[in-house]
Structure formats: C-alpha cells, structure tokens
Amino acid sequence: MKAIVIQAGGPAFAEVAQPVPQAREVLVRVHACALNRADLGMAAGHMHGARGGAGTVLGMEFAGVVSAVGAQVTHVKPGDRVMGSGAGAFAEYAVADRGRVMPIPAASMSFEQAATLPVALQTMHDAVITHGQLKAGGSVLIQGASSGVGLMAMKIARLQGASLVIGTSTDAGRRAKLTEHGAHLALDTTDPAWVDAVLAATDGKGVDLIVDQVSGPLATANLRATRILGRIVNVGRLGGMKAEFDFDLHALRRISYIGVTFRTRSAEEVHEINRLMLADLGAALADGRLSLPIDRSFALAQTPDALAHMKANRHFGKVVVTVAP
Figure 1: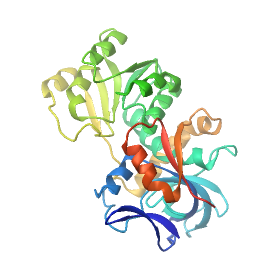
Figure 2: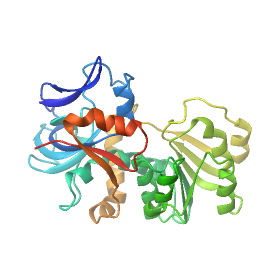
Figure 3: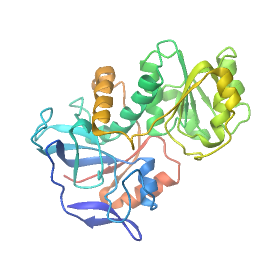
Figure 4: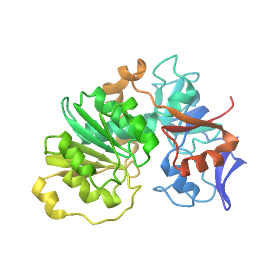
C-alpha cells in the first residue's frame, strides 16, 4: 500500500506492506486523515513516545471504512464508516486498537470532517471534563485556542455550560475568529496585561480552569490567572518544556496542577477515555454541535506540503489529508 514514511531525507511517499489486524484490532481503509503537532516532531526526526525514526508511517488520526476486524472486535464490522486514532494513519490502510475506533456519528458527516475529531475529542474531553472538572457556570481559559484541539476545548466548555470561556492566540487574525467558535473573550498572551484582563473578567478571582497547550514562559502567569483552588491541566508544551515556576504562588492559591499525555496510557485507559467521551458528547457529535473547521486539504502524496503548511503556523483549525478510495 502507499503511505507517508519517515526516511533519511524526511517524510516521503512510499510503498509499504499493508498491516494485518490482530485479535483486538481494526483494519480501516483510510479515506481521510488529519495532522497533529506530534506529526511535525516525528517528521523532523524526533520520537513521540515509542514511535518515530526511519521507516515509521506518520499519522495519528483517520476516518474511513472498516476492511477487517480481529476476533475480539464486536462493536464495528467490515463496511462500517468509522473514525479513530492510532499509529500509521497517513496511508491507504491503518490498523488501530478496538478501543480507539468508533462509528462515525452521523450519516451526513464526511470522512474529512470525521478525521478531524478523534484526537481533539479524546484530548479535550479528558482535559476539560475528566481532569479539569469543569461544571456548568464555571470559567475556563484555553491557552493556544486556535488549534483544532483548542477549538474543541472551547466547544466542549460551552456545551458543558461554562459561563466564561477565554481563548488565547498570539495571531491577530486567528484571535479574531475565536468568538465564532465558543470564546466569550479572546486574548493575546504576548500582551503583558493579559492576566489583568482575565482577572477583570472574573471579578479579580481568576478562572476555575486553565487548559494549557503552551507552557514554557506562561507557567507562572497561568498561576496568577487561576483562582484559589482552581485547576491547571497541562496538555501541551509548544512554548517550551522548562521555565520558571512560582512554587509559593502555586501553594498560596492551592492550585491543582495536572499533567496529561497519551504516550504513557494503556489501550484500556484510552478505551475508557473514548467511552466516557462518547457518553457525554455522543449526542452533540451526532447533531453537529461539535465540529471543527478544516483549514486546508491535501492529497496523500502532498503530505510533506501539508506538514510544511502546519509548520508555518498560519492555519486555523485542522489540516486534512485525503486518500483516494
């Protein structure tokens, strides 16, 4: 089959063996897949958990039609339209653990639309609801809100009944669009007064929850923007892996600081994340209340161009790769 494979000179269109599903796995004929930041890292030669290096098929999320299932798979069958997350999505066929694959929730949803959803839904339901414990009437700040996962976080927060949703972006054009996708207030964290704006919007208390995809230099400022007994869920480190951290402020505000990643989670844990997500959000997915904008689409052979487009950091929403059936 044709796939995008990491080679010495970078990602390239190549012919590789078609994967074979094991007992707990689903083989999907891919129709569309979506890019994520981790794909950029692996394309540049970095490892993402245990994945990466020469010969690795890129890609983390996909949508398509079930081609075959393992003996222990009962919730989907050949011919079903599905979406899911798993290794090797930028290919004509992808195989994934059964707990990562779910039916596409609406007959009207295209494969391209469905491919944008799995990672964002898993990541942000886990961050906003499971670990963030956001309740109706609560307030939340999403750092890096113009990405696909950031936009999904705001939509989930609004669906959860949040009274105040704040999104951040350092790009003026993207920041202007945030209110169209769930933000009550859009801020620029390069503005030294951004924390003051958060405090002004929360009567001086700070938000109940920050979902942080940036980290780095924002670490201590996030503490200032979070209320006493609030929560910070760290899901990304685009701004840097290390920075100064005011431990005294953290203690004074008694903030719960929670780090999350899927790289150290078992298949069973991811299965449970998907189960909880579908229980809470399944109806909103089916009726179209939870969807993501597609910034641009590329053909599978153009995936290196798609990666370059994402690396330029000018996109809003998801970048999608289509695979000819």
